[in-house]
Length: 220
Image (cartoon, rainbow, N blue to C red):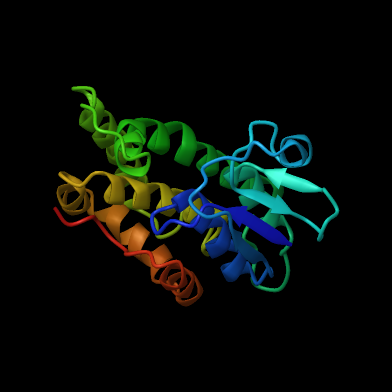
């Protein structure tokens, strides 16, 4: 399988796919599309992503069979491994639903609250964030803090892609919010502990190093 993605040290959506694949032992060949954020190639639009966006996972060389969207690819990768003691998508249908729940939370709550800062940092635009942007992030982190204060992992007793999805959304919070990243890590300690638990997993840590990523809040 080939993952087509934009090579960027802070590209959390693509990195979480590579991290999940490394953790689950799923072989993926990463293929950088350079600095391009999208493709206008007709074949790409027809076969890969109708909006021309990355990342895209090509299932077989030249087959034209693709999965697009970071979370859809993340789910596909996790479903490929469900054996022995490794259950990245949960052990039961209920746990799988919980995994889906937290993947949705990572995008609809954490990423949505962080979007003004993502636009500024990742898209390299210069604009003022809404006055309530930081309050929205804090509100989401507070709810997550309450959950993680009484558990190590979000689903079950082992690392799952629910943890990967949430940790990489938190990574974006820390990396995109230059002014408040360190303060957020200190204020929401259970969230930061969970983030470190995921990012310090040997296979995930090795993936992040390979991608040139720096862990933790961006220093002001």
